[in-house]
Length: 313
Image (cartoon, rainbow, N blue to C red):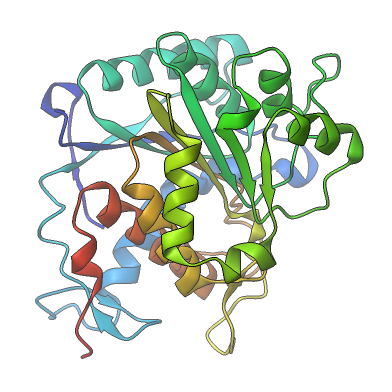
């Protein structure tokens, strides 16, 4: 949303820092995820001003509503991308940890625009060194197990629950893409963990969801959220009659993200978007819908949720 480029020294406890973590496995279907941070930045500009560059306010071209972003520009600071491309995982993880620690020391919250799921474990391990965390994953896949023996994108969060870095009772998986295996689900729910299906999430009221997110974060220092965008189907386009996130309408998901933003979220990690996939390029509806959802979170996190009650143009 045209946030200004800045430095760590500009951040304070009212700031929302944007960082890019262009990580990917760089093989097969994983190739292209590293382009996600820059693609989302470009889309957030295109999304707002494409209808008419002479408008005094940007326009949500899908909802056909004006958006007043003037109140967020001074508080949202883009720190750029962390240069992790081409580095070994351990070196890249150390760089990401250093930046996250520096942001947290200044009291700011972070939106991490990432590529694949690798960064989620890095963020959780980094922050768990000094904070007791709660965790919500929206979309994506549930872990295959709580075992640490075989690590993959789908098991890394599970292994953190298994080794005690995260407590199951302080974690939840919302609208996952796939059905959870009994190897994961039985011990996970036995320890108080929650898996909420897309259908259940669609039917929940905001008052019920508020109770849920308050209970989840009880007795923890901060909340880490992973929004995995792979649940947006690639065929999304301007003629789509129903824009959905794995069965959840975009309008409902934006309301949920606004509510989550009012929790003590330290880091929102955006993963799972490959801009090289058909239907997800900058000029396609797919990415614009992602920014619509992120806008709800940003307003909620900065305490500006009433600004989402926008006027028709």
